[in-house]
Amino acid sequence: MSSENKEQFQIEYQAGKAAFERGEYKSAVKRLEAACALMNRNSRLGGEAQMWLVTAYEAAGETAEAIALCQQLSRHPDPETRKQGKRLLYILQAPKLKRPEEWMTKIPDLGAIAESESQYRRGSSAGASTSDRRPKLTPEPVDLSQVNTKDNQFIWVALIAIILTVGGLIWLGI
Image 1 (cartoon, one colour):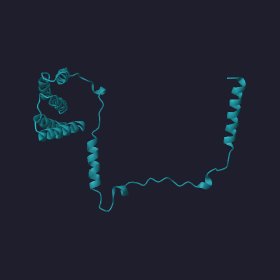
Image 2 (cartoon, rainbow, N blue to C red):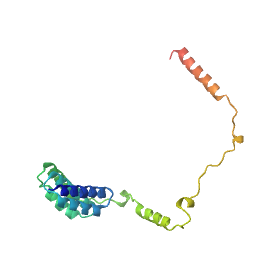
Image 3 (cartoon, rainbow, N blue to C red):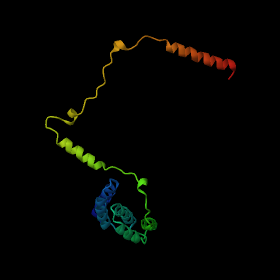
Image 4 (cartoon, rainbow, N blue to C red):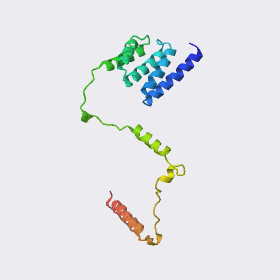
């Protein structure tokens, strides 16, 4: 394998993993497929890239492709890749359990909110910036003539109470 292919493999492989971690599963599949095409599939690193591809297939809803690739990986020359392939194949072929709707938590699509906010910003008038439209949050000024600044002897009372408590504990021998 040439150094150019190794470099291109690393670029595609890292981009595929990053896309997967961002939740861009279709993009991850494309990048990881490109990476697998550049690497010897029977090498340890080729097997690792294929394992990522299996998870990307599953996440993208391409379960049949994920199972087919796992079946190939369960016969991989690298023992660790073979073991992981068999484990993942077992998981992928496990029966899907039905879950009641009340067990599920609905997660709102925050992408739609971000898009509408960016459109709001783009649609703003030329003279007003984003910070101009937001209300200014400044604390109300405090009239210092209304603040009680007279010493109320609290520290002396607290200090005497502490001394009496410590003295009483020492006197009682506790």
